[in-house]
Length: 387
Image 1 (cartoon, rainbow, N blue to C red):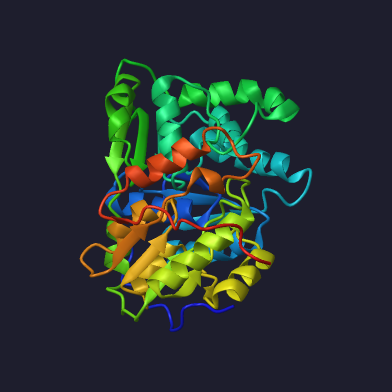
Image 2 (image 1 turned 90 degrees about the vertical axis):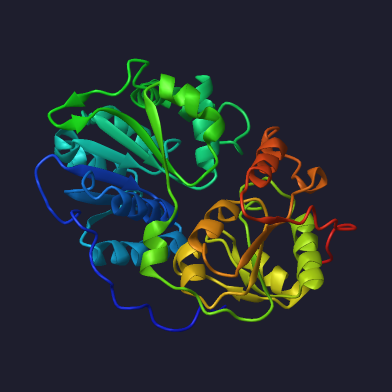
């Protein structure tokens, strides 16, 4: 395994306003590196609202995710943002301890920023805060499903989940309903309380235009995220030769069949001359070893979100991806550079036997709504890859 070489640049300065601490400021809850990156983007765009910002990392157990979170947390601290690390999943009693330790700050917070409205942890915290303003930042393409479900008045369910969620979901249902109510302030529009505008804001780089009218009727505003902080902080990137391929965790989440995926990656690498494979943080080592054995691709385990790695470089002039968050975010992060992002569709035949009935339509929507990308169709694998 390898990682991009070179050293990270010296910090270029702090986000104006975010280091001013005052009682009842802004509290952000993040569980992934992408969520924390998008909190940084929001703070860059709205430094006044981000004054007194404290980021609470609800640390997951996955080692790769934890590693990337620590690196992005370092960048946040360089920008003058207070970061609090919580071992929120360290054991059976940790959730109660974490929630208890945050109770006072939740009561005082004037604004709350969240990165994953589907998270039960975050939904529980939403029911405990009296904050007048809630900001939802992107957690990747899941934001598209969240916005659609919110606009249609549906309960919040991840697109790749199959079934009702079982007994645990039933027990948590009252909290989920209260959290959803916090995210739909009503049709009366936003107001102001103690100098803080009330309501809900969605800060997103995803294509959510179709739902904007319905969201406004619910008192929800949408603010575009154009990755201005990322572009100002890093790059432009140095370009290499060849093509880079971006991996996906669709196999790990039970959406795509492993053998079909390996065949598609092999075909893409051969057709487009790919030399490197940027692994998703959730891809397992056994799968990556099979990718290398089948294709000869160099596996890169990024230590930061790909938007930052690509902006810094070195990066190939062509980046190939399956339907995923990066087909929406990389064109924004790499704006003004000669890099082309290309997306390969996922065929119905690639879907795993237990995949959610919504999977095909959702993945097609991710591809079809992507802007400033090249569409490749499918890799058209002839059959299952050999072991």
